[in-house]
Structure formats: structure tokens, C-alpha cells
Length: 81
Image (cartoon, rainbow, N blue to C red):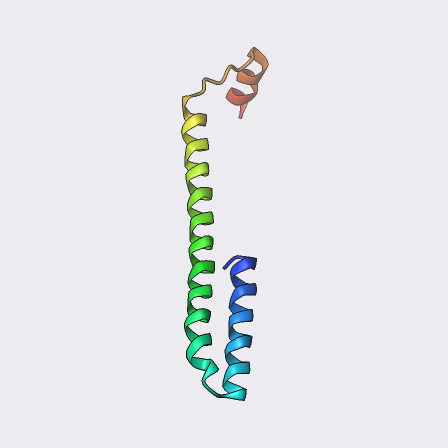
């Protein structure tokens, strides 16, 4: 979990516990809002990870297509090992 997701989850948990401690009809409103907030944070985290993975995949594909020009000294070093 990212830092943002952790902070939102902690806040949602704190609000839920506070509501349960005080009781009352507020729980009917707070519980769905807490679940929505947690869902939004989760969706943001998944989207961030998806973009990061796509960026890494694109970078790998670009690296495969680029030709590397080795100098004569580089080739000697590679062959000697």
C-alpha cells in the first residue's frame, strides 16, 4: 500500500471507531462514506501502480530497439571476461 492509501485507511478507521464509540445514527452516514473513501484511495493506488508498470514496460521496449555502439576498447573488455 502506498503512503496515501495508508493515511486514508487510518483516517477512515479512526472515524469509524469514533462513530462507534459515540453511537447514534451517524454510523448510517459515516460507514458508507468511509467505504467510498477507502475505495477511492485503493483505486488511486492501483492506477498509480498500473502507470508505473506501463512506463517500465515502455522503457524496456525502447531499450531493446536501440542499437548500442561499442568502441573497440569496450569489445576487448567484454571478450576478455
